Length: 406
Image 1: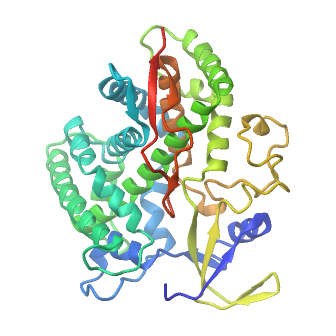
Image 2: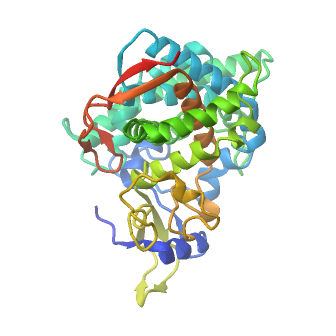
């Protein structure tokens, strides 16, 4: 609202945008995002703070290599342990569960442990705030109308509550670091890193940045896990193929041995199923950019300062690019050439491709491995309505009936 905006979509549009990052386009956060995640930049609550540069907003998680394969490989065993523990505590002995609620608990726990380097108690503190994270997700693209009853009002209140809890976690982390405790996580890096002026980040700034990272690493992964359970629950033939692949991986491991990087690379069919899930139900609809200089595209001249909205899903159900686009068919990714370039971009592309792509892949595959090895399931509401705007959500939380494997 209030911004002159054009929409760029389709494979040619995707290629044009990805090829011109930081030449014609730079990142743009909606005003509601700026208010929620960058409270430290503005003392005047009536005016949104200016967006930071690309390097400032992404440097923390891109440069130190926290999301590179070698770093993620070290965390994979813990990811497997956490997933097993949560399935045990939330599913064991139950005949019915709501998938979406569990997926949010799982992904927020994983994100807290990975990004905050937090202990069990700290992770549990974050999970208790899960409804606040939901409020923030819904308010990220809302009008800035800070009055009771609006999405932005709820998101702003939620951000205050989460920020308060995160500042306590930051103080505890600083105390541990002062005692010489060795730690390697994104929060520790934020505490010790200095800006171009040689100054440390303040606690409010760290809290806001960490909150943004947690929201990004939580909502999209939870959504993908939820719809993965939906589509696989509708197709027993696909479930059987996943199970056979995962059984082969498990058979090659010693009893009690945790998943390793090599195991994940063997989960080719399972990953194809996840890709097809993201094609039919993208967890992210699109993002915004700001135009750096006048340019012409498709015979239209777009002036400097205008905003661009690009959508990830404009090609996903187009029969020109995907045969029988409404059919859930993981085998389409087994073809040697795969999808036509720039027609399937769930993680974006170019220099601003989602830095958490590998983290998301590992989290979802780890969940899928553990769940199919122990359970079968059926949907209790087969044609459940999907609601939501920027984030698709099953109206009833995707309730399923569990059947334990023997």
